[in-house]
Length: 281
Image 1: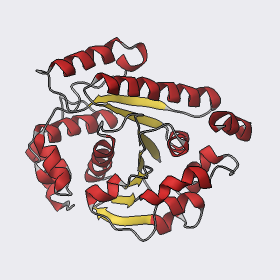
Image 2: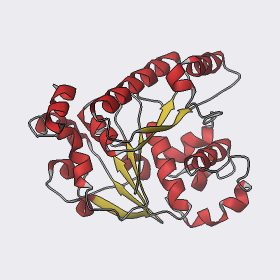
Image 3: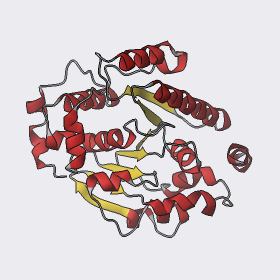
């Protein structure tokens, strides 16, 4: 089972949008995918207009099993675990739990029914984010086109490095640093891309051209749809397709034309305890 987290310490960089499109896109390509919202803001549920009976909070506290919190068939091949603001209390409620950074990983043990699990994370390096990092094996780091987002990306890489140092036996690979809302005619975009390219850790993982600025992406979100459902020939649809090709190990230059490639998409509707103590003490 492939385990992928979308993470950045800064908010407003397109994490939820990217997580939804990676999950929905892989499902559209025939995979069985689970999207888990580990952000108490609950934006995945808002975006996809989901009203769950059980949530991520209950999964983490052990009140519900994984199969009880999963919303099945949100899209063909796509299941979702939704979060709500009630999960803001998890930091306090789980503070006394042993090995509390690995709770999410343990909730999935023995459950391999998905090809890929995609985790949307909160914009902070908190307990829930560490749980996502210690569950995931691969990361996508979206970065908005402003210099504060670069700072957030560097802080995120610091957190990734800390996890690698404390848990060296765990795999944690950066698949892509993903520029979002890219407008190449904009000075802020050019300055941000230059800063990302010049950073030794970030630059080698930079996925260009990233996701270009596209008003259809905003309209799709407002319509509770993916970009492929709302505007399958838009630049954002093209860019997220390239990202999927990259994630699957394919080439952006060799994928088929948009209309042909996604003609079928019309069927879519909408020493552990010590280490953990050292990390969050």
